Length: 397
Image (cartoon, rainbow, N blue to C red):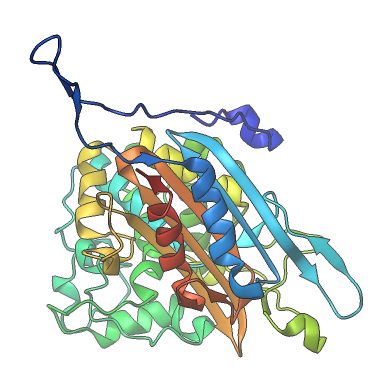
């Protein structure tokens, strides 16, 4: 498992595992030939890494900058980075590295879901319990709110609708309060919306208030719930992964920039994303790729975060994960679990992806700081498909 000291020093130990080829032999008599059964496909970690590099840098259409980290059986196995984290028209350039903090976008939802499940365990609740008792007392609750469950939110089946735009005015404390007052239609079909996880910025402090000897957080205060959510996430998730001071503020000085792939040629400056505390819950953590890899490893290979029963609930229901991976034709070696992140502003932005392959203990995290890139399987959102292709194509007979 990731050691706490190695995470802090950004140095890691590589762990290698070789999978034996299974040969089934039958001998009937001494003079009869030995028959061998079909060869069992073996996973080639080096090939997976090379496929990933080739499929992201496809057709000489590489991002301005990107980075990845692969874990195997809970250990960091591979990291890499290409291009630049900063590439400005004034000549300011900083190479992308595996230790550069980047906005991970909606992968935050997966982290929030882990902590929600942890609190549900600790309070002996159920995912189908109603959220209404945990909303601020002063909030008006519109029609249908009294029927909403934790599972409705984590499956994006709440009926909340913000169109995933204008985050400052749809994911703020006041915006969430107004959405609750407006009410919802329940049951609702799946409709991916950031507010389903932004509301946990209030619900996690509320749930925490019910723990024994917990410091009470005022649910009537935007600033208090922001701080309460961030502090509890740090304690319940990141501290347990050996990660210090994970937050929603980009690093200073020289924060990473976010581009369109053509910005370098066109002498266009990249974007910065500032502080996400006030709209967090469903997005906005700034992390290095190796820090993301640590969470992958602790989630998949330990019970430090949640029980196996809760992990099964997350994976069976895609709580905080992307449900469209269910039944995906690219699932050639068991189930794959993943979450993407995506921010786009007038053609500039970023993509992130975590992917977990339980059958052989492989996980990967990738962040790209550019939009408009053509990967092996297509433009932009096809990053996730190209990662799965890279994995599938790394199995050899």
